[in-house]
Length: 293
Image (cartoon, rainbow, N blue to C red; front, side, top):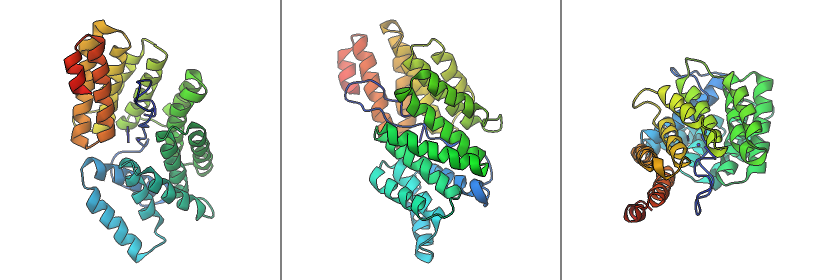
């Protein structure tokens, strides 16, 4: 839910949304305790969305709530699915409820604050998004939750590139780097691709290399959502180099759109196609551009 704020930047008619909210989570067996359990719920929701099994997963969590209306894990899962399906009002209501009813705060509270940050960022509300992610960072550090700490730094980087500038955003990514290991390739790829996006914004020539590095960390067919964002950012890197690189830019936007279509990521695909249209227009291919739009 690669949930990057930066993905559709600066194109007329396209709002800045789509946070790269891939959690900095370990791969493998889902744990059942503490922060790992909370992260497992978010991971399960993402897997259900990517595998198009949302209806079945929703039914499981609704059944859990029918048995126990105070089941916080089920409410977190449903809220995460709502974010993935762009049902932001309902998602934020669920997240806010989770924040309000936990005394003292627990790992699910931290994930709820991260969820609220994602929703606010998706809607372009950068000041609240930064505030919510900052609260999550404090809670994560206090509890020693490394996964949530890394995720909070990643989100803050995406907000602060717009509010404080590239240097502040890159500082957050440097902090996030310390929570990425070789055992977590998707997390490392997420950080690399957000860094590449920031380099794109500053017209830094390192954008292509960083996005390529992120893509190389992922095996073919794995982590399709993260792959689609890395491909998108590669398209942007070539777009920023001008019309001479239109073919390369169009290639990566098409690849990103194909990944997003397979995932059922309608907003992501729409953004990739709009950038594809801009690329084709830039190189004078107006009929193809109209088809893409």
